[in-house]
Amino acid sequence: MTNRPSSASAALTGLAGLAALAISIAALTGTGWPIHLKAMIIVAATAAAMIAVDTLCFRTYRNPSTGLQSGPVRKLHLERVARKLIGLIVTLAILAAIYWIVPEYRRDFYAPYWSALSIAMPVLLAAAPFYIAYVDRRQQEPEDVYAEIGALILTGTLPTEMNRLRQHTLGWAVKGFFLPLMFTYSCATLGSLFASLGEPQPFQFLRWHAVATDILFMVDVLIAVVGYVFTLRLIDNHIRSTEPTLFGWLVCLACYPPLNKATGAYLDYETGTNWTTLLQAWPALQAAWGIAILLCLFIFVWSTVSFGLRFSNLTHRGIITSGPYRWTKHPAYISKNIAWWLISMPFLAEAGPAEGLRHSLILLALNGVYALRAFTEERHLSRDPDYVAYSAYIAEHGILARLKRLRAAVPQTGFTQLAE
Image (cartoon, rainbow, N blue to C red):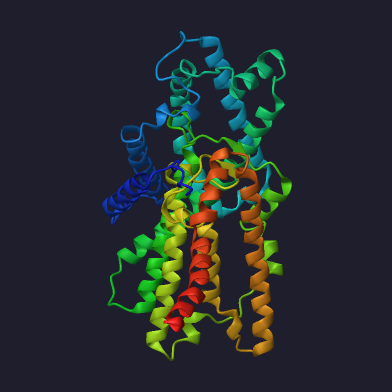
């Protein structure tokens, strides 16, 4: 029997983050602070709780995958620390130049992110020398990619391993793309939640369903922000590798702005009506349907929370086997795609069966995009023996494996009863 491999992030870490998130939201309710500042405080509190659990309870800083020794193994090397600091500053400067050049990031949509960055960047630059010096004294291989970038700037020395520079570039591309998006989303969902909390109303199922949906998406994007901000070797949630293929990047980015505009133009499965209107004549069925949608969204968010400090698209930061990942390799994608079917109900288009079939086929095509995302992610992660072991476990103990065993047992049970 295959045992379930240990998870890179424990359930307790995610629960601690959720508790801190809820407490900080309650403390900030009613304050007149800007939404980007509230979001920063909530992200910091959530991250602090999860880092505390990972550090104090699970001692992740001692994991061999950190590449660090438990204590200093060398004296402070100021020249190398300076090179690493220059490498970091150059990386940030290139990212800032891309933000400045690309028109997408001049939209008002990203205003909360720039406001937050104006506060966070001085703190980052002030803390960076101390963090770099602390880690450098403990690194097994101190001449990392930041040191090599610094050497390239100062002396023109080319990096010894170009693949490390490539992985560094791809890792920062992931962070640079998704962090502005997720932080801006978190501000929008927080603003909606604070507005709802400030206007209590009598219970109405659809209204509270909308509030519950906002809360779930708020948790999802806030945990994502934590994952993208806190990528640190010291707590062992650094990037091990990044999706190596252009195809893998394309199928992922096709699901997010601005590329999802093109995806939506060709895969617009909406019919103009959804479950709230199609089922309004049957209140009990409407409530049951709405609860089913919330259950799918809960599983989707639970999947994100299960990553703890390690959530990120397109990267490998440790194999997660806890939460809903103990039953299937892609709980987030499965639950999200089922929710789309339940929300839009494209098979019941008011224009008739032909339109219902057409919109259903379009949604199936969008489901196919997520199937391709799952395929590329598995191909990437399968380079890690831990993921291979996890895949073997799911093949034996996952939901599909259990359903197959149940199906195989039913005819035998029926035959036995008939013989008796």
